[in-house]
Length: 440
Image 1 (cartoon, rainbow, N blue to C red):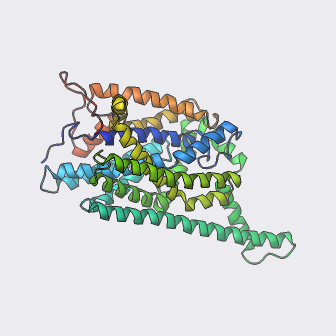
Image 2 (cartoon, rainbow, N blue to C red; image 1 turned 90 degrees about the horizontal axis):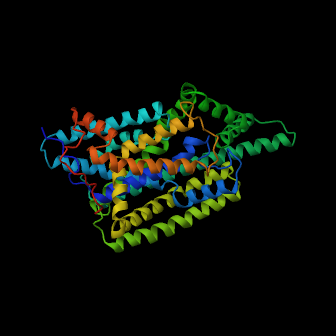
Image 3 (tube, rainbow, N blue to C red; image 1 turned 90 degrees about the vertical axis):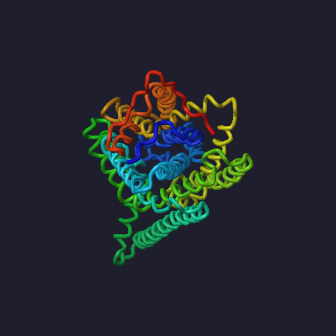
């Protein structure tokens, strides 16, 4: 039986730093889901639609929408491959596969806990656990084949969005034709009333009635039990219907891309400066052109349901290049000598990414729901970012301090112990000195 690797062995600094930035960045995007009802894509659903709120939405949509999740997902693919490579090097039997599947299945458990106990319907751990089970069969593919498969899955995601867009337009056309006949005083044909009702229900998904939103907010703020009563339905939808319609395909695409980039040396910092500069220039150029067009379209149409469906057609064409651009920028920053100390702090956050991700859910549970301060729906969109900054400060301070005394974050320790079926040593030996790995 192969022993688990020692903590800190073969850590890749750029991976840890990128993971730290990604987990902090995910909160920057998730905060609207934690603090506002159904307002992630549409800033006009809840609140006063102030200039500050629209400016914040615009900035996030242009530069960060989908990109932090993208980084986090491709890093998971890379980490899964690293785990298998390191254990395969130390064993010639089925032990690496056994450990890998056990490790991945436990991630599903963490995702269920995050979704149903911490009440975060936007959890990604459940997605990573399920999608990660299939990554095992791709571990030995060449970077070229991994890139081809990643492109196929990303294209499939866009095709799914095209299908949904066509369904929406058909529902809209049928309802509009029926409404026109009704307005002209003509008798409704068979199916006309159903078409009108279907379109009305579809529109309500994009912009729920104010009284329904107010009731929803009141339940989330009342108590933990009442919050669970309404939020568990959101979690169930996200971990079932939405996952199988969108999540699993998106995860596969980005995870396979992460595996390819690891094998190519991009994620380890081994690529040339020219490569990273090309990632920045090409990624940001394409991404910003697409994102600017989407933002202009949404604002010009006053965030109508049709406009929200339209931007799904180009969503991945904007967010994936932007994700690549961010990755190139992080790689160059990791090579900047005067940013070494900052990179080490982000690396500490990244080494405790699972703990920090779950802690974000816990803190937001206590801040926004009836389990604590009950601020759900009470802060404007721009005010939510004061909460983000406060949580960032906590995690940037506590992560390196924790790792001075302990080998892993609490959740990482529990995950490792469950993977190896025995308790792992947590506290560092008194004589040991802590060194958060510097970026490669």
